Image 1 (cartoon, rainbow, N blue to C red):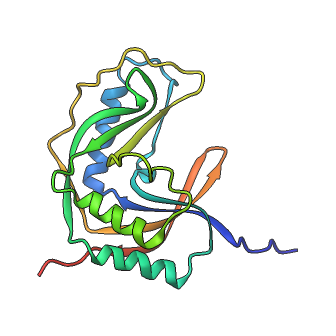
Image 2: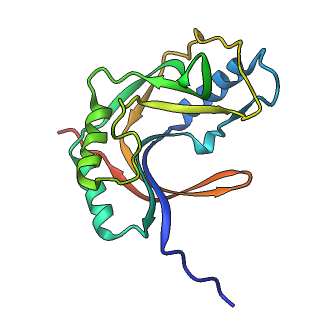
Length: 193
């Protein structure tokens, strides 16, 4: 008996991370982990790193219309760079649950791209809609039984910048060993003249 096709998928739109940046982030994660009790943080594997722009949630199979709207939003923004910033945490460094690396967006290109996607897609599940958007890369999640009290928030990465040239529509499948991400569509940003 064959399994029926899933009619809904857990989807989000993100910026992928290039190999050179991922290699630096691997080194940076190792530096952050130095001195911390082992097993307190579940570090994000390099294959799962991304910048989430819009979380669509449990969504019908992506239609040509959704893909077309993502393409339109991508074409409204030229390629841009996001310099690597400083580490931070949600909800706060005093009670970290999610440890992330900020990305500097002085010209607000990332914010413009996100706003363009939100206007076109009107995502019902985008819980960041009412919050200030902070471009960031999630590095790790503090385990429920873990508590981090000593952490060097002043550590810096190498002075690199992420070159943003495309966005991706990603399907996320949650498994006991962590999420599995599949790229369903790539949308190139507008080429410079």
